[in-house]
Length: 438
Image 1 (cartoon, rainbow, N blue to C red):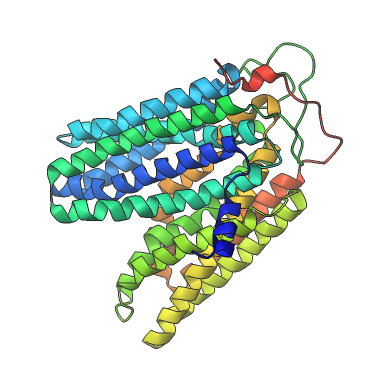
Image 2: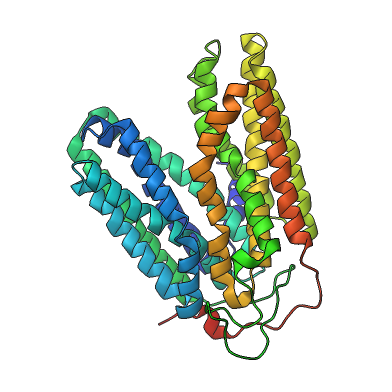
């Protein structure tokens, strides 16, 4: 690799040792997830004998339960500190995925899947909270961009590593991969503990979009400081959350709809799907390299958000055209659509990181992030049914409807952000709110 390219890739990594340690942990986490996702369905359907409909039922039940776990984990982190809660949840995640080796039928699969999904969703907001606590505001954007890029690389590496095990048709090796996946969470926990020990940057540095400052007096009955509303009672924050759920439909288009769409249009070779997913992974690294160099504020975040909408709407238009012309035109349009989809996906991700971080009150930071992650969980639960069950059968009109949903999502996020004025920054919250623990 030439030195300029190597230098550019190195620029994607966080500047500080603590941020790099967190990013490394995220890579290991994603690698294990790639191992699991590439083998689990084949194993439980083909070897254990669980029917596909039963697998879908278990995932749906687990997804519903996952909706309820983000906010409570944030509440615990705000009360007891991010470090002890996050590390405990990572350790439990490792244990839960290791339990898949003991599953011999549907009841066990349902129980373990529910446990693992609840813990997954509980950890999600605390990862972002840990980033803010470790690197503070200055290197936050670069660190989150690095984590997203490395997670994409990790998923791909894990999937490729699992391919040889799948080809070997070895039940023992697949169970071993389940154990390896469980161990990766322990490695991630170790990396997170190291990062949180190296430094405790001022996590409560106010963001560009300030929140209410608690007034004097006792805490509210739900445990929030006086003057800080519940995230579910904040119209601005809920507008941001619901809008984000709609914007997240780009993930469903790429992972769920794209393969189905290609199979439906038989003139387009199905072998193009893995190539397009590889393009998505590679381009994500490039886009995040650019995003990591930006000094994002609220105005720029909103510009990135609407730039994401433009690219996502253009991608919808290309998908609509792709199935109507010759094969060469179809392949070209699909490839271009995936490129635009990838750019839009990453621009939206950067925006959602910034706005969710900025609109979360420092005194209840983790709890607000936990509420915000319900948008991602709800999308994962309802998105495939909406896209495949409602929009896909509509053909061209379905792509137009999807474009409108992207615009509506960006509108909701923009309204939520605009509802918060930008007065003088409030004073930092007490350090005990985000204690690193001992």
